[in-house]
Length: 147
Length: 147
DNA sequence: CCTCTTATTGAAAAAAACTTTCAATATGAT
DNA sequence: ATCATATTGAAAGTTTTTTTCAATAAGAGG
Image (tube, rainbow over all chains, first blue to last red; front, side, top):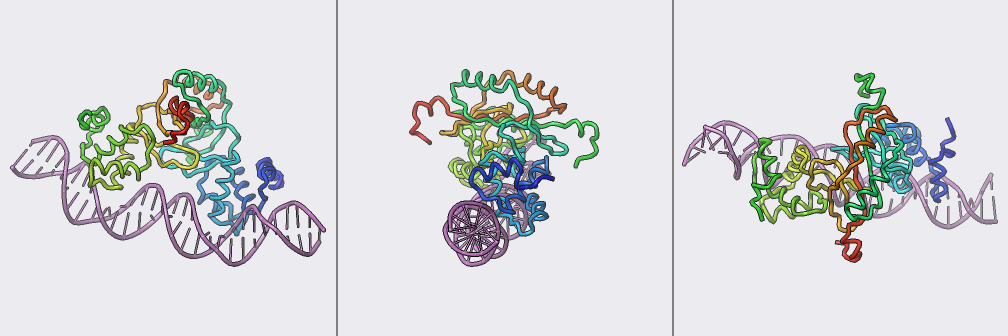
């Protein structure tokens, strides 16, 4: 278990001039340890095991901050958009509908697609969100474990 | 201005066995007349000009219904996911960051991309959301009008 | 290591977003 | 025109998120 202050995510925070406080480190660690998208309430609960004084307000504030820095992202689903997952810088990811694990995937061909949309619509495209959902290999084999 | 009960969206509602009530038609019409994604509160305000008795609860209920029928969809953005826009059946669309217009775009090549992701990750992919944002041709020409 | 400045925090209160309940009403089938 | 019933709006309730502000802790500088 690496020093929480030395993780790549923590480094980004530090380099951006933010203090590495216990509450922030707790939220970071919770996100890093969970592949599934978590809502603020859950992050709060898990985070309190690492930093008992953690407040829910700080969870919200930290998620906003991480989101701005590109370290976390909101996970959108049909009915709710309350979850967050740790993130690389890519804006495309794949969610397992059964275990809710969120992974990023190698995505070639998207650039070409965007270019073709630009040509056809005349829009200048500055950002994208590609969210796929399906079943991960594990959940295909073990349909029962809807954890 | 066509009879609100005869629009394609209204037909879908009718064929699915739902009653074409004034409140529902008002919500439908508001969505059809606005290219931008609108939040429930705004739909409520605009809808009341068409059906003065319209209640906010009914706006929520109708949006859920339209969403299920594929006639409307939630528009996700970085900080909020409270907006809805009328929708075809495709799950990809393009949002103008200036005027907030939402359009669908011809999207070829996505199938191939999904297949390649399936091969590389082992996930069975059952749904996707592709949301692009940028500037529409109008807003490129008239940067001032941030309406 | 201390000290000090100030970013950050948590609690409480408030606001916003959404849902549930239920009696009254409007729809559309007959 | 009548009627069964899906649908409605208002009110109350719940959940989610934001604001405010005095107390605290991080880390820069000595």
